[in-house]
Length: 145
Image (tube, rainbow, N blue to C red; front, side, top):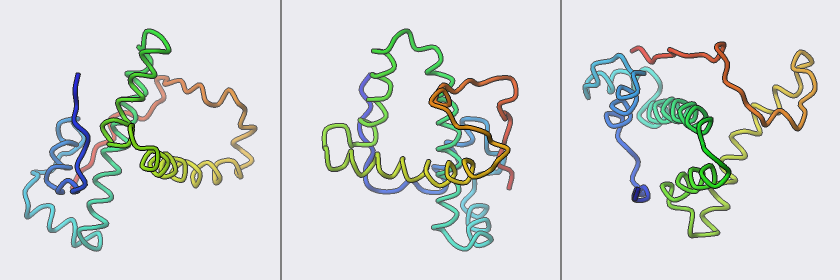
């Protein structure tokens, strides 16, 4: 499977809404007018696009977790992880790769720091990396505007 790397131009809010709708996570009409109203409510196109893109990112990350649970072996998993880097256009460029991995690490660090400070979380052990999706995983979270 050959998937070309993404381009540097951001997706439009309509495209992001359509991607969310394809996953069953967007109940809106998806019109430009609807997106314009929502962007104004959230403070502009930038904040709105960021919310849509991050909603899509969260949905796709859950899809990756579910799909990876069926990986046959470590090579399949490595190939799947490499696909993410190739699609992001960073797999063959060490400087871009470091920047991309740094961005991912910083996204994880903030929430992890907050969770780790909560005494009810308990000890975060090395086994915490073994994520298991159970029936308690939040499903059906849909964007409704």
